[in-house]
Length: 196
Length: 226
Length: 211
Image (tube, rainbow over all chains, first blue to last red; front, top):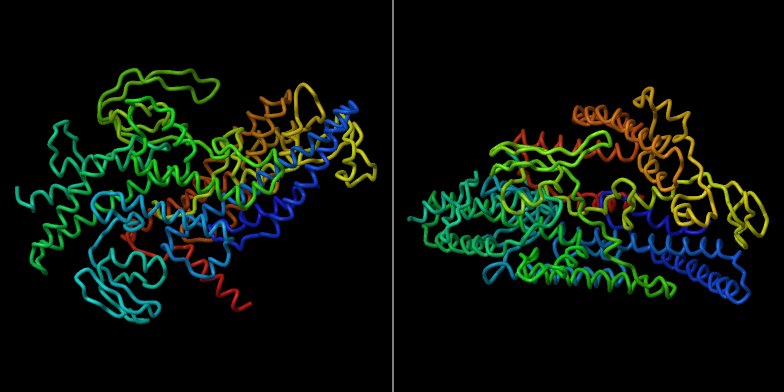
């Protein structure tokens, strides 16, 4: 049956329902595009025959193949669009620099899309209010306290707090830090919010 | 007014009526922000842009931060003020995030609506959001084209984004509180056996209704989504 | 909360399908019993049970919903679509008796979705199908809701086992509401945590290493 490869692409993403980004399936896409080419060529020749020789009995098969073409198109674009939604999520969860393991899963055009998205988001945020703008990827949860206790889960190096003090984030060290400075590092899994 | 007054007012997020006066106290400003935030959070569609409100709140935040610089370090007051700033920044960010999320989710429809807007009608997008939405559409179209569409047969090289991206579902149900009494609101039937009927919405009462039914009341501020 | 950043395109509402919804694409992969009402020249290989060059008129075969929808036309009929068993009268009677005992996952898992989609095909039984699908949903909703609200910190796999996809989504929504409420009650709503995406990537990396 036609369109099996295309649905396989969709299943691949559907299985990872938490939003992780599997490796870009270039080979899968190529195979679907090849099937489309074959379907289209067969239809072209049937359409010609139907026109020149008045063979209207070919119409059901032409229609059949056209449905398959549309289905393939839908599956591929849905696959690609869903990947964009996952890549978008990465910007919000990781910040603007992605770990290499994830970048390896993206095709060149996806990296380009991600860079454009970053740029659009940054210029939007810069445009808010004063000179510096407002970083709306921070403050994801309502603040309860100004300072929080955090434990360092891995070596991260030096880290500057508001007032210019620099502290060293060493694995297993514990600190009492301004909440809003830590949010991103906690999301990235560098720090852990300790609840007393 | 002392800074402390302004700040503690501003920090009172429990609501209150927005006044129509030109001069708004910080407390009123924050109450307005909170209303806009909850409405935006709970309505399925993008609401009217409130750029001016956002600007005022940003100014207020800058102002508060500047004042804080003058307070002695270690002063207990300072941490209370820090806290207030954090809370306002959270509400503001969350508000802007909900809007951006909807713009990304419905971008072709949002842009279409903006295109067909009559002169003088209020805009649904701030200039910055409009720029963002246009870039998002262009970026996404370029991407789909480059990776796949241009390799497809000639008659399949484009897709209608307006058809491909779903529209906001105005039939979803929302909770609301009535701020101004409403008479004779027409409610559509839920089943074939039911007929349409009218209800009066008493001030202060709370309801669960189809968003479509009360969308105009959200827009004119007669009800508050909760 | 606006903390979950990946928000997939949701399935369409009612008889609508969303083009980019992965769920809808998989729903439209469900197979329907059909009968060809004309010859399909040169497509014989599609029907694996025969080795003819063409698909003759009157062939009974199963085709996916997306193809049935694409080929179906009222004026120029090239296929006719039959009702899958679960929507026929016999099963409708079973659902009418007690919808709660039916395993909708095995029978579906897109019982409601496919049922709504069947309305595209102008069956004379359409209104009975619609009625049955709706009543089944109403009849089971209470149980789905209660079980999702009463299962805290326990294995829910048995509870969702017999649920249709739509019901599972509702169950999960109920669970996430319940969990958020419990966190709030314990005063943990403002607890900052690592992004679940980040954590899951790490888990997978670990698994890759061990493999």
